[in-house]
Amino acid sequence: MIVYKFGGASVKNAEGVKNLLRILIEKPLCGTVIVVSAMGKMTNALELVVEAVIRNKNDWELPFLEIKDFHTKVISDLFPNSGHPIYMKVHEIFAELQHFILHTKSADHAYLYDQIVCYGEILSTTIISEYLIDNGIYNEWIDARDCILTDDSYRSAKVNWESSKKAILSKIDSNSIYITQGFIGSVEQQTASTTLGREGSDYTAAIFAYCLSSNHVTIWKDVLGVYNADPRYFNNPTLLERISYKEAIELAFYGASVIHPKTLQPLQAKNIPLYVRSFNDLQARGTCVGKGKGIEPKIPCYILKDKQTLLSLSSLDFSFMMEDHIGEVFKLLHRYKIKVNLIQTSAISFTVCVSDMYNNLEILIQDLQKYFRVRYNSDVKLYTIRHFSRDTSSKIELDNEVLLRQQSRETLQLVVR
Image (tube, rainbow, N blue to C red; front, side):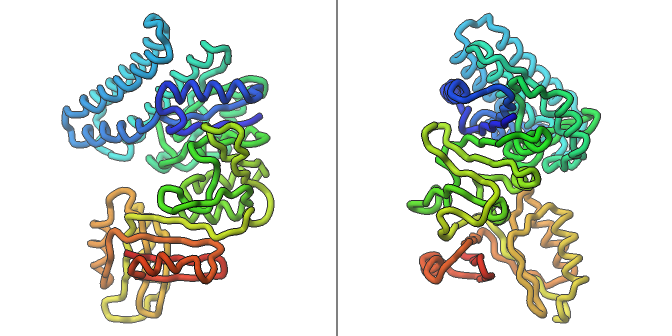
């Protein structure tokens, strides 16, 4: 079997769905699982609904109607016949979502997030499945929440691999075509929806591929493949033709945005190649991630993380920062779901560069100040350069104030403002 994954950018409107059809027509389809994200920016739009529900305001109705109007426009472009069953299916999905919003008693932000945001993927896959059937590609729509079973760590759920593999194998036939959702799963026994973290659709594709021992996974994106630098931030990036699993995991760990960090481990475990290809240029070969050494061509790779915070801690009595001190820091970082992207220690200080994904930084600092002297710089940037050379960081250091520099054999990191 093979697994295809289409992100939100590839199905951002009706033309994107039609292009997805063109891709599938050109590719062999027997034994294929097609994983699809929410359309365009619908996850962001649903997040606005979540925030309104949390505030206990009735203003959730405005973003809700905008989301409904968006999908109605897409289906009207794809299905000119207003009597097509898709109209009733989409209506019922929105009615189900509205019923949940009106009747939920929960005030848990993470729980509400997962129950509401998952509808973006449910809507996109329902529409695309019907469109493919109408155009001669018969497929079976399956609910990823029946396949990917997790714990109840809402917004960053952990997969129960044994239960998920059993569920997937019971639902997937190697001679058929399936459409399912990226990013979402459910607490076992389907008691609640969960999500796998932002950009988790790539991870979904890897989970299905691992459980099915697939031949390969292809991620279809709006870029030609994996570059040595993000084209949004760096001029004239170079396309990487091949990347080893190890190198790709390193790049993902440091924040390369093309491949989700959790995607690669299950693929490496079964030596399943991952292809990153462009949905706009089917002739381009893209990038292959698989077994091998390093990268081709071997050149410096640049990764930028913005909106970072640099935290520097020292003990109140200027004693050494020992393992017990650092252990307490990590407990707090874990409690408030602060992602650590760089660590540097000295005799009397401990410094971390972090991402505040859940807006918990202020309360973290308050807790840290009970035990440590805390200094911090907000809104800084973290540059990571893999396979750096003497000249690779000169422009970054010339154009910015360097707050921290850390270097190993293969990797140079700079925190700047």
